[in-house]
Image (cartoon, rainbow, N blue to C red):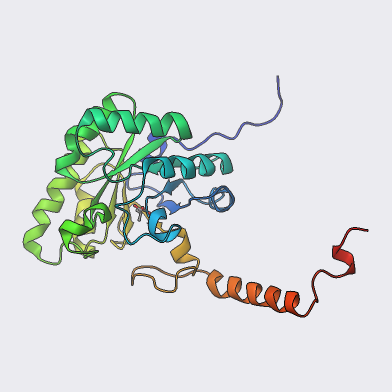
Length: 269
Ligand code: KIV
C-alpha cells in the first residue's frame, strides 16, 4: 500500500457546512495552469460560462456550447487536487425540462469528473434543482443578475434597486434552498438585499457584486488579475497581468527584430 498521503477534494457537504462559518473563498478558472494556482487557496473553483466572454471574445454567455464547458471543465479538474470543481451548465442545456437538465448535467459530471454543476434561475428552476439533487447531482443555484437572461433583463443590470422587487428575489432564494441547492450565487444585487437573503437561507450564499455579509465570495479570475481593460465596479483588481504581458510581448518582439534572441545560450549545437 502506498504510504503517500492522499489529498482529498473539498466535498459538497463541506461547503454547505460553512454556512455562517469561515468565509468561503472561490474564483473562476478555465485552464489547468491557473486552476493549479487557485487550487492552493480556493474552497471551490467555478468553471464559469463567463469563459465565453473572457476567453472566447463572445458578447454574452448565451452562445457558449456544452462541449466547450466540458473541455474547460476537464482541464480544471486535471490541474487541481483540493478544491471542489463546479461547472456551469450553459444556456439552452437545462431550462427546457428536468429530464433534459439531468441528461446534460450527467454528461458534464461523467466527462469532467467535476463535483457539482451550477444553473441560473430562482423559483422557475426549483423543480429542476430538486430533480437533479434527488438523482445524485449536486446543484449550486445562481440568482439576482443572471447573465444568461441578459436579453430579457435588458443588459447586465444590478438587481433589487427598487425595494418592491426584493420579495421576488427572496422567494427565489427560498425556492432554490428548499429544492435542495447546496449553495447560491448572489450576483449583481444591492447590498442590503444580499445581506437579508444571507440571513434568511440555511445554505451558504456566494456573493459577486453583492455583500460582504455573504458566506463567501467569487470573482472572475481574469478580472481580478487585471487582464481585462474594463472591469465592473465591484471587482477589486489584485494584479496587473495585462500590462505585464504587454511589456513581455513587446520586449520579445524587440529582441526578435534586433536579433537579440536567441542568444548563443539558447541555441542547440
Ligand atoms: O460564469 C461565471 O463566471 C459565473 C460567476 C460570475 C459567478 O457565473
